[in-house]
Image 1 (cartoon, rainbow, N blue to C red):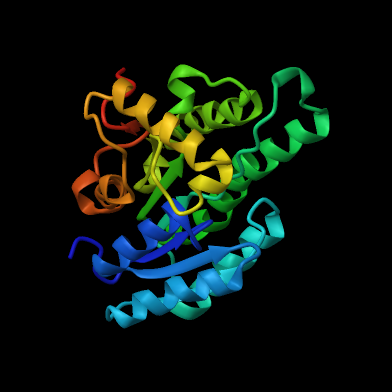
Image 2: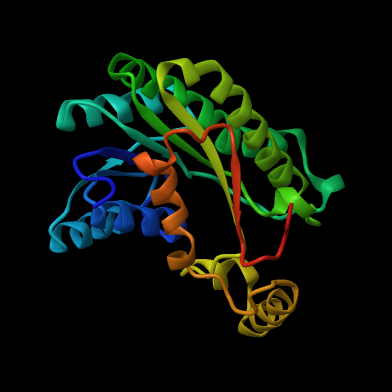
Length: 254
């Protein structure tokens, strides 16, 4: 198991991509902290599934966009497991609005939830990773950074900021033997997708278009993505930092 006895915090892990990462990390031997903001039932279901598979995990409610929330999440992790080895900054929001209808408050809300959350979580784990001279930080951006997307200006801007943050932070803490990398997932098929698209017909049309754009002409599943997270969280990537790995079936190439 590639993550045996490692302690991993995954923000926004009660569903979708975060849930998939939590389950895969647990299978690889990690002790997993399932962070959530509002839906305790979903988060506890993820923990239950991990435990049923013989893994170890607990759920913790925290608003990781706030410094106190990030600090409490990390302190609870250290109190339970003694340290933290891996941080996956996955929590984010993705509202859809025409760019000229986005208010300053809307803009600030996206930046707070998507960018500031990663900053304060990194600050919170850093003292523990620095002390043990080991750590893996994986920031989640988006394929939308590579091509831009209509009705998503604030979201795409926030995801671009994450890539810049990843590169700069990797420079800052590489000397502490802490790696900082980023993953840009493509259009991953999740249980929350239909609610965002609005109708089965619209979803089918979107899926057809995606298949025509990708080099691998099928929908991306969480199982196509979680291996990249395991790689960047494991010792296999100890000499890789400041990088962005795009996992989207060959939709965008760079």
